Image (cartoon, rainbow, N blue to C red; front, top):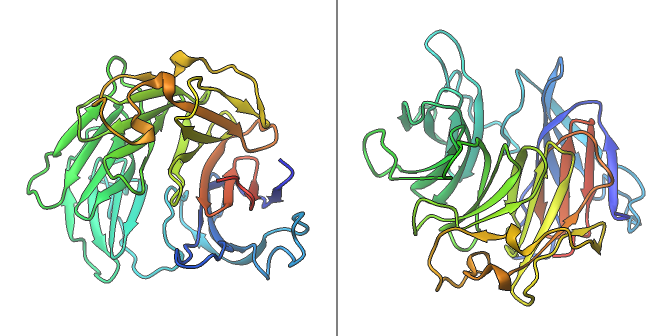
Length: 346
């Protein structure tokens, strides 16, 4: 808690992302971008927490992130992946008579894939002015998020609680694979792929459950974990240490999940203290191959030790977005605040 710096920015933050840094150096990220929503004038803004942001004597986080520049944005910012405007594709997502919200974007340079309320999946290239591929009627409901699995494959989540795998090498508008939760169709809002094992993905949705899937196996999630008391808006594996995972929610919380197999008792940590309010039955394997070796697909939930630590002071307003890189975590809220933590234990 004491490592967190809060910056009030007079705008509701919908998306927040670090500028990538080279994995071959020990450099910590120092620039991040934010997008706003539900304001009269929405913006995309760039902030610094480096030598132009926090002071160099900033072990105790004296000083605030500094605004470098900002750009007006027509409409709510619903996805954010890049820090420069190289191309502009007007009305890529649309209804017959009007534009449709673009609800998610993912980049695998030079390819960009977007999804929208119109049920379309669209493939672009940064260096190409036209649209490379459109999958019309990919969904009859809103597609909320998208992630790359491989160079030619993306995974989308929708309002029906489905994951759909799309292979751009295939013609037509049919997904290569469909996965879904059984029972009620609980909308899924977010998805992220394990950085080292592309077949493992995490999702979160309207019921606040964290789901871990193995897309090689079958149509059901491998495990379900009660994470939040309201909608989960984003889920992110740590890019270099994927035994750590982060989620944020409408309930005002941001959780740091650590997964290991050195204990037979799943636990829940709040404010750094084990309160033992997460029972063993909370981690429920519901599918998959028991011989898989990933710690997220351990097979026997009684041997998976899950610790979930609250990363923010007591919050009452939604935490809409987060990003983590190295030991640096940043998140944005409806309370018009940005929180930065540069000492995340990973």
